[in-house]
Amino acid sequence: FGPDYAQNRLCYALRDADVRLILSVSRPAALRRRRGPKTAHSPQGQKAAYTEMASILQYMRTDSPATVPPADNNDTHALVFRCHDPTPAALQRIAAAADQLQQARVAVWVSLDTTHVPEEPPSLLPILQHSPPRKKRRSAPPTPAQKVRRTLSSHIARGAIRVHEYDEADMVRRYPVLRDLKRNPRLQESEEFQRGTHSLAWGLHAEALNAWYQSLERKPSFVWCFEDDVGFSGSLETLVDIVKRDCGDADLVTADIKLRPSEAWWWLDVHSTAFAERYGDDVYISREHVQRFSMRFLDRLHVLSLQRVTCWSEALVPTIAHAEGFVVAELPRLGTPFAHDGRVSQQEWAHITESHAGRRADRLYHALKF
Image (cartoon, rainbow, N blue to C red; front, side, top):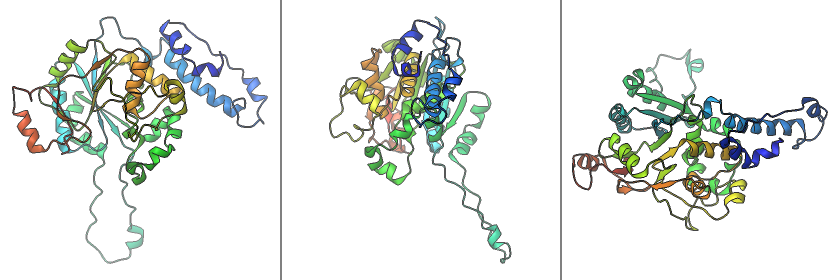
């Protein structure tokens, strides 16, 4: 069972069939080629191939903590807020969500991208130690992680909210294809990446989410993913129940389940070679402000990322779901606006949330930029 098979979908089929595999590596054979070039047959090339193979076999092991299947009666849910530097109002919404979902036994997480944390300026003390006393320098502002943990401290202390911190380097270590994708010309031409203010986590949400999900000892059956500037004009327990009723065990619940990208869509060519070879032009896109994933779908996204199959996540998630026969359902209860360029002011949100009945009640809104 050689490394080349790591690229084959046979791995996933065998895992589903509960077939156990053993990888036998001949160390002496690899050492005999110690002086060869860095090719797939050199020790360095073999090491990279076997590392990728080991990751996929780890996924396939039925006794691995990262792949323990749910029990027949398992209906556990988690809700993850995807954050970078959440506002105080966003943190208040997260705290309220944890309170609303406590009775429903939905685990609430904050997934925090810490890639572009402002660094404290270097100390001038060595230079100024012989200078006259000056006004005391203000301490550095708190980092986003510090603000999250400080604001949500009471919820964190009682286990109502948990925090997962990661950065772009963590994503690249887990999914090496992202190192190549970051050099994509179209991505580099974008204003956000030219400024250097955005990390890959901004647009590669599937890998960012799996950086958290695949680290769990026991994985929930379904995962809700919310951007931190999403608002729901009601109790989130109501939304969870509505989607359970209307969408059942769908592998992906998202908006725009049949939407195709136009040729003008900026991120259309931000994809790996393996993605283009596998799916060609048969691409879908969807709004990803709120989505729900099943365990088997997240696991499949994880394996494909290891096999260097990835693209901008607005296209990656719906494209794979449709192409590989996963069950896709339309996200209900969308309010207006619910779009990347939608804006809801603080005053408008207060008015919406005061509408306890009618068309504005129990609906999702995006974006709450305050």
